[in-house]
Length: 339
Image (cartoon, rainbow, N blue to C red; front, side, top):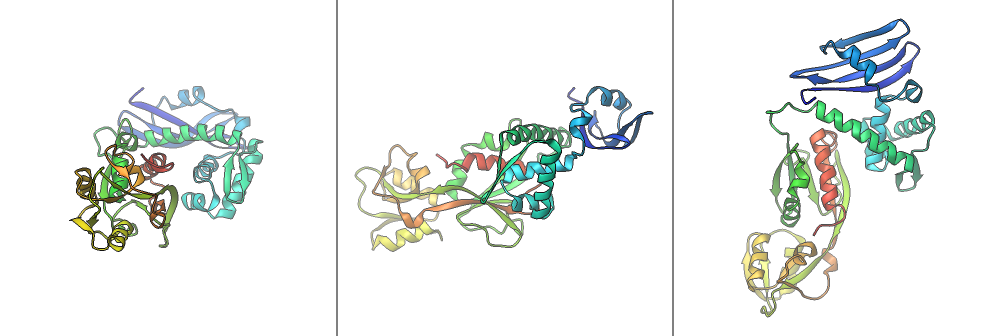
């Protein structure tokens, strides 16, 4: 039913019966409410949802009362945060709780469900087989919630501003369809800049940086390691293309060129274009240089330019549905390297 969607979420089993939360819409009418089953019959206290609710609630339960005893959707939502981030500190920021409290909730959830969901290690929380099964189920429910509560057709697709250096931006753009979803559920404003934008001031919502964030209120997630090397067309003269930018690679070329600058450009992308016509040597990340069949790698990697990539966002923004989806997709694109 394209225009009729109702999702039933179990809240808790109490002495008065099983309490449910209903979220959904029929046509253009959205509704939300709480219902409980009692021995005397079905009683509902809701805001603006359709008459067929009572019949659907009786027919559409997806878990039984015994399984749900003591388990609330808040607990499952907190489990989702821990499972996605792999630790209590990052998950606590998403869940709006403290790490010790979140740890106690996860232990209580395991006791209630009668299964071990996590393997607790010094580096964080790893999922057990049972935890991975539960993660799949909860992600399915969370996806339905996002879809049901999303803007109706015809409204503006939510915008996420993503800032990264020239080369990382090019790599992400090549996977644009993976980033924006199919059907598209996020609109990305790409800000290709060598400078670090101020995420606290919302110059960007998500930033890809070459170091871990140190500013208060920002959260970082380590991605892949990036290596650099010199490249040139076969037969290119022994000289360099200099990029006028405040980047480690540009400073490295300036330091070692020793007067052997053949060309100068204002933007890194132009340096690649000039290298491809044999105008000089250029320093590139290997995921860019190795992808150019015409270029040769000259010598070894440049160890002083190697670094880890970090995905950075503001704590207050990272739980927004469109930001969370974009983060997850960027991690899939860049998390194991690009190229």
